[in-house]
Length: 127
Image 1 (spheres, rainbow, N blue to C red):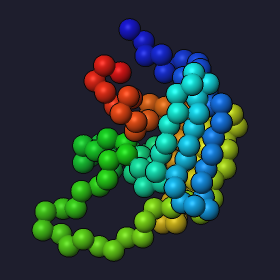
Image 2 (image 1 turned 90 degrees about the vertical axis):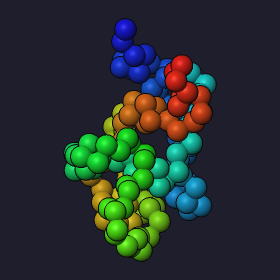
Image 3 (image 1 turned 60 degrees about the vertical axis):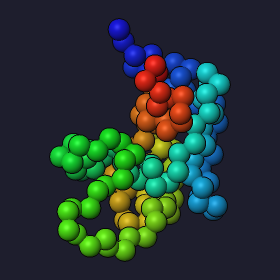
Image 4 (image 1 turned 45 degrees about the horizontal axis):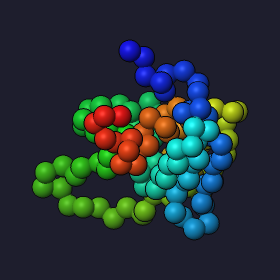
């Protein structure tokens, strides 16, 4: 059975998108089907869909949005909290962030964002 997220629909079409750069609280999306998603900037940076980040995640077995794990015995390094310095729409299908760690390769499509929605409803096994 094909996932309803595979074809453009109300589930993958945002009604409104708020990128809270000033407050640093993340991104809020109200979808056309009425669902509301909130993404922290840290979650979004850890979910970057670019090829480089996807490859790193697949090697470590992380899912999009999961934080990287330090190697055993490694000392934790100071890393500034992930925050975009800018955000821009890409056509009618995606959003792109330029992050404070100089990373700017990921295009976050609306479909991808709906697939990785971190809310309890979307993460439940029945979903």
